[in-house]
Image: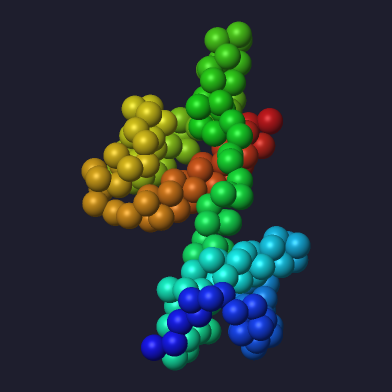
Length: 175
């Protein structure tokens, strides 16, 4: 086993020269921002320098470098994930304020909503009830229906789209 205990800079430069293009390309196809991709690729080699004394240079180095790069990409994505603003709670609060400030409950949109909800099968109505009347979070609904998060969120998305289209059609017909 060959380890670089003395942190030989010339050997490190050779390692970087041999793997830099592959690491940069690996990161660049996974990160949209070229500046961020460049920084992450540099960080891979900084970690290599810090851990050089622990790495067996008799073993292939590229898999280790690419695994480190993938971990850095994952960390970057987690840190830079967009935070949604005004989720369901904000929308519901605005809706309740609007309902409380007027008597739109008897208006054409709510009449159409009731009609459209009546067209759904019982399972779909129950899903809507749990989410929007009972205020259950997705995790709780998943447990009740025995489905995964993606399945439940997709069903809710499709139901909202279906209800929106139905309401649009019903309110246009009423006018």
